[in-house]
Length: 104
Image 1 (spheres, one colour):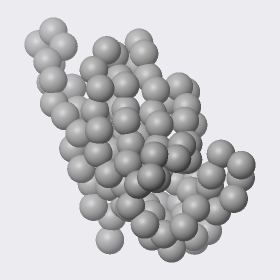
Image 2 (cartoon, rainbow, N blue to C red; image 1 turned 180 degrees about the vertical axis):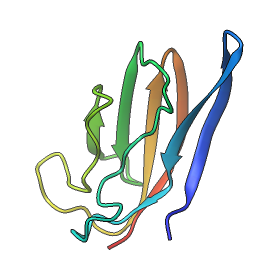
Image 3 (cartoon, rainbow, N blue to C red; image 1 turned 180 degrees about the horizontal axis):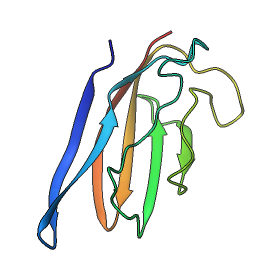
Image 4 (tube, helix red, strand yellow; image 1 turned 45 degrees about the horizontal axis):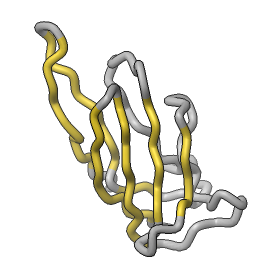
């Protein structure tokens, strides 16, 4: 089962904007939830950066490209271990933080 965390709702003009960050993904090669994808829900990214860290603060993934998803591998290409990771998402001048669980 995939649980989804609604990161935030904010006003832009008259429309509400929602960013969706899944809180769990399973990069096990079965074709279901194999990558962590941030859903901007139609929002335009003027500025975007996401960094994912271990609980010890080691950088696992970083991108400023909204079209690049985390495949559960380290920056050196090794498969990350199952567990909880922390993200920092900078989106259009606002910063959001949370956790992501990687399951095998």
